[in-house]
Length: 77
Image 1 (cartoon, one colour):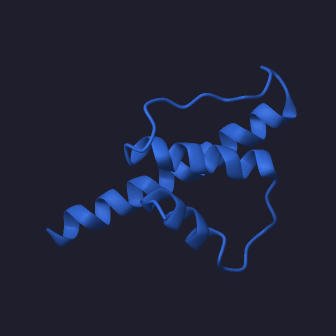
Image 2 (cartoon, helix red, strand yellow):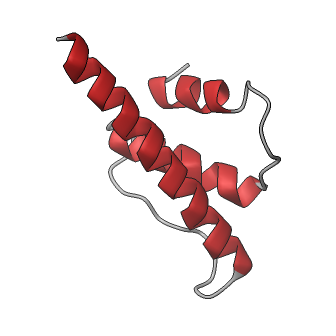
Image 3 (cartoon, rainbow, N blue to C red):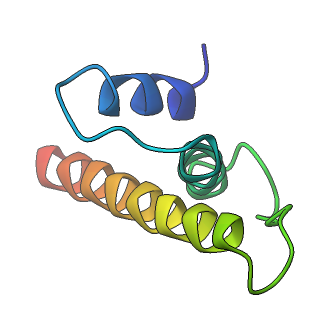
C-alpha cells in the first residue's frame, strides 16, 4: 500500500462526517500528488458542478494532511 493510500485510510478510520466519493477522490489525488506518487492532479468533473466542488474540498483536506505529515517529519529530523 502506498504512503498516500495509508494516510487516506487513516483519515477515514476514525469517526467523522460521511464524505462523498468525489470528496474522497480529491483527497487521495492531493495526497498522491504531494507525496510524488502522481505528476499532476486533474479533476475529472465538469467545471461549475457540485462534484467538482466536492473534489476540490477533498483535495484541500489532502493538502492539509500532507503538509501536517511533512511538518512532523521535519520536526523529527
